[in-house]
Amino acid sequence: MSQIIKAAAVQCSPVLYSQAGTVKKICDTILELGQQGVQFAVFPETVVPYYPYFSFVQPPFAMGKEHLKLLHESVVVPSAATTLIGQACKEANMVVSIGINERAGGTIYNAQLLFDADGSIIQHRRKITPTYHERMVWGQGDGSGLRAIDSAVGRIGSLACWEHYNPLARFALMADGEQIHAAMFPGSLVGQIFADQISATIQHHALESGCFVVNATAWLDPEQQQQIMQDTGCELGPISGGCFTAIVSPEGKFLSEPITQGEGYVIADLDFSLIEKRKRMMDSVGHYSRPELLSLLIDRRPTSVLHELKLENPSNNSIEKVSEFAEVQA
Image 1 (spheres, one colour):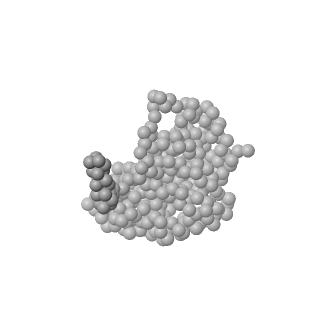
Image 2 (cartoon, helix red, strand yellow; image 1 turned 120 degrees about the horizontal axis):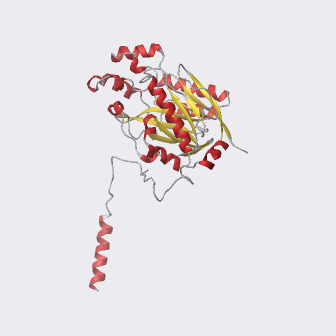
Image 3 (cartoon, helix red, strand yellow; image 1 turned 120 degrees about the vertical axis):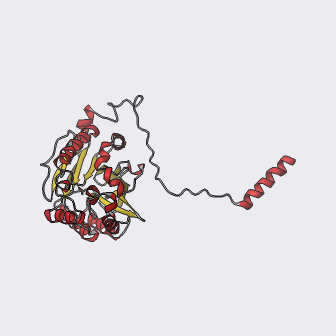
């Protein structure tokens, strides 16, 4: 009997400039989806507390105020904010993938958190390379998060935004056996061309990986757009459009009508028999691969700014040397 999972891709607005407000909104949405029988949900990229739209429209010398504002509202992992989201997941009995701005000391990272149905965080990964303007705001992640994770609903891989344009990052998740791919983009950015690119990207990954793709983008309402325009001096165009929240089957089909305007969610049943149906014909990491010709070398070791070399115990070391000298003399 095939496994069938009810999934949701959520398009929502942040509570602009408020970590606490956005977390509460996310938790309320999780509980609402749980009442509808949803077992897995994906929320947009860095929706908590909000995507750094200012970095797209302001020059570096002018973004200090907005950058600090985001730093102060970003999420420490773990913290009260992650505890609240975990509690909502547990109450709803739901697996949830969500994008956050993570604060670690004086640095912000674009992070993805995967909560299991018991409320625990089973993956905490950081975007490996911030995109273009984002490099003024976020630090770089490492390869430790380029893996699929077993959860209550199946094996899940996750990438954020333009990480999907790194084919080797995607292949790492394919090779790790992802069944569901959690994709997330900012939304309300760049314009219609961004939405068109997202559509092509998630369909292509579903076909290549032979997995389901659940993709979420954020939405800025008109009042939020006006607030950002007032705070940054930008025009409306750069912070409009680019929304495409959808669920794609392993055959590249949209399982429900995508959302491109407003808040809401796409809900669909993921029938895992479609994974086998696709991979029977095209398994990119199995019978359709040529590992003797093409393969991936990956470093999944967590990076660290500190590598401590431990000294040997001086007294023990001296005793060993004396013992060695005595043996030689004998």
